[in-house]
Image (cartoon, rainbow over all chains, first blue to last red; front, side, top):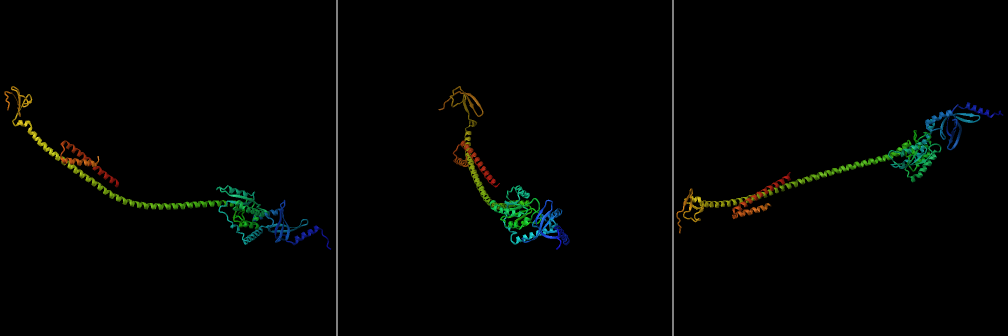
Length: 437
Length: 61
């Protein structure tokens, strides 16, 4: 019988055997479980190998503070996520045995690119599965209204991204009114997937009552870490089957998440989602303006056409009218000259008539004047013959007594008488008077 | 006075003169009246003629 060893002796034996027999380090593949970081900064977790749900192997692992800090920061910068449970890692480990704490793996390094590839593989598997199940493009069939006016928001009330998003919607420069209702959810961590699914279900239940037209999943703000929940198959199925078209604005710079792929429309950030919603208003408004302009243009064309037609018709009417007018004018002109001729003829007639009258009057009057003249001259002649002077000249004389003709006086002897001859006045005295019988 | 009245009066004067029964004093008055009437009628005809001419000229212009 061998000498019995003390526990510590055995411990040392195991330790030295392990150190002698095993390589200083091994690269192993395992899934992280029970991960925790202690107060001093050391990380403690299990590395597990599973087949389905059955655990094939499980080893206690640790990573000391300094190493862990280096590994973790490199890992995060490359994969965009921290080391956490469920993650499959390629780790460089040293197998150690401590007499008190027993067997454990001390992690010297973790190959981040393996995890990246692993995650990509899992992601690809999820995508393949969703594709096979016809879920990948399912949500894109949900009709997204031309103008998105009522939305449900899946986010965390405290997320900066949410505040910015709401702010951007409400204070848009165009004054568009968008109804929004938050369905709060955890956006990271182990509970995120269940919380997101519950929030989406709640939103679906409110769809009718609130008249929701789209669902917006926004994250944004804070760390770029912990996007894994958005690659989750269950969440992807929920989004794909969602009654509402889903818009994502998860806010990350690396590859699209699976949630982005199944969503109706994927935007980079909450800001981009807000812009997308606002642009639906703007595009609609622009279209209306465009249509209005088009209507305006077409109307103007029609008006111009009509105007031209009217112009043409008016020209023709004018031409016809002028022709007609010219014809009428010629007629009038003709009538006028006839009228002129006729009326002037009438005047001529009247002139002739008047001239005849005048001639008649003047001839008759001069004729009468002539006969009067003749009478007058015979009278004159007679008068001339009766002139006393003419009688005196023939040798007769006239005798007066006291200026009276002698035949009218009563002559007495001794009376003075005056005898008048053609060229003499003879004074005599009556000597004798004899009366004639 | 109207043109026709004037003409009628002239015709009457003419017929009176044709009869040759008027005295010289009356004759003088009648001839003087006839001359005035002829002058009036001529004036009237001339004016009418001018008016006609003018009316149709205006129409043309």
